[in-house]
Image (cartoon, rainbow, N blue to C red; front, side, top):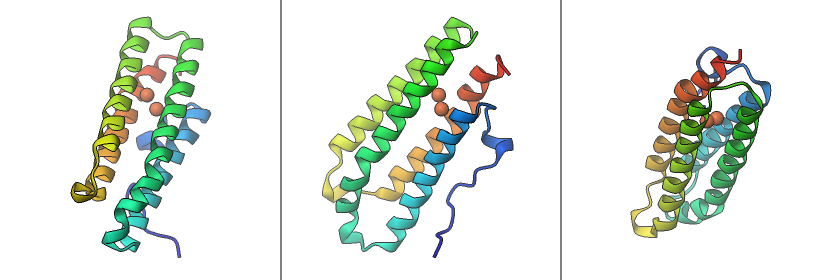
Amino acid sequence: MEGRNFIEWTDKEFSINNDILDAQHKGFVKMINDIFNNINLIDRSKEFEYFECVKEDISNYLKIHFYTEEKIMGKLNICKELVKAHIKEHDKFIENFDMIIKNFKKEDLNLDELVFFLIDWIADHVQTIDKKTFKEVN
Ligand SMILES: [Fe+2]
Ligand SMILES: [Fe+2]
C-alpha cells in the first residue's frame, strides 16, 4: 500500500527549472515522505534502530545534492556573491544536521521532530535561495 504524502511536490511550488536539480529535490521529498510513513508504521521502540539505518542515507543524499548543485552553479553565469552565500547555506546545514545525528540519543529520539525540521529546511531553501539563484539563468 502506498503511504500518504507528508509533503506534496508541485512544479509551481518547487521547480527551479533545472531538470537535474528538480529530480534531486523530488528524490529528497520522496525520501522524507517514505521516512514519515515508515515512522508511522513501526513500533516506537524500534524508532532508534530505524533512525540509525536512515541517518546516513539522508546525510549522503544531501551531500551529493549540494555537490551537484554547486557544480552546476559554478558553470553558469551567476553572480559570485550569490553563489558564495548559497554554498555557505549548504555547509551550515550539513554541519547542523551532522551534529544533530551525532548527538541523538535513544532516550531523546523524536523522529517526527527530525522530519519536520528537514521538511521546513528543504522547502524553505528550495523556494527561496535555490529559486533565486537559478532565476538568474532561466
Ligand atoms: Fe537544492
Ligand atoms: Fe541549494
